[in-house]
Length: 459
Image (cartoon, rainbow, N blue to C red):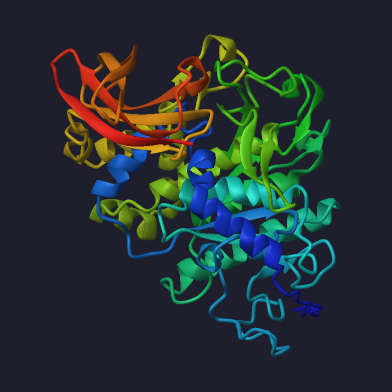
């Protein structure tokens, strides 16, 4: 077996990025980021349910095959590490053919440098951040950082690395390898056909047999991949989930591929806000941003502890992977704009997929009475300057009045909105009300005369 040589350099953490992350925490920037596109996929409702259910003691892993990542921008706890490898001892401790792959592997230069000498990558960092946004609430989930190469042989080797790690995990009862449940591939090769790459397609079947689903984005072109080709979209593996991109209106983005046979589902990647490689938050879109929503959802589903479900993961990993794919496709919200152009004709809905998993194992009571009658979950950012968002939880769908009350108890403004059974995000534009600086209270009252109040600081 060929042993890989290491060529790993480290870089000191830059003070400017520490300060940036501190400011994000201080001023609630992360809360704004997490809200982006989450209401559309009912992430908040899913999170509410997942907070109530028991969690698996295992640590599901999502492998992200992409560019390098600026590691210092993230918490150390989100990264998968190869605990069976002693870092920097120049020995292949776990015998997998890769020397010092403690933090993953770089398949573009055949080293263990997965951070590009601390520089990261313009594509790798934001994709990693998008997956992390979805799974950060589930602290058990770890993200495996694998740097892909541009050559097809390098792509195949990165997939084989994932395969070998999950296979070893299964064969040793979890004592070795890694519990990889999903692979995020926000990339592909345009205008290629599966028929010309049988080895590539077969790897997805091998991964599926071990219990791994692969999520791949389609091209950022308004093309029918059924007619012009794409890899890996045209592979007919049951363990491959191909993802296109929709906007906030659930319309397929013009510059996003489709295919009634080759494209499975859509996700709201359009204008996603994420952590960029520069260390600043910004817009990152395209189908590359859509795939992470699906990969993250797979990871979240695997955190649910239901005894029979966890037994199935161990004893029937292949069938369980297919079940998870089925729950994601069946749980999608159907959209007219997606009719007849993708197989599911729908956009990802995390909450519905979670409910379907609980239904599958007879645990539906865990979500049926999970929502409060009326509750303001949070207001962010707070203090507020121009606008803010209000998260309202309710156990019914009805009209509500939202009042802004000053410190003296006088109602300054009142407007109407609607709640849903679940969690609704309401945008409040302060420019409409011309409020002076100070402390105010936001009160939400429904038709049943139930109400909740929270403090708002206008700066």
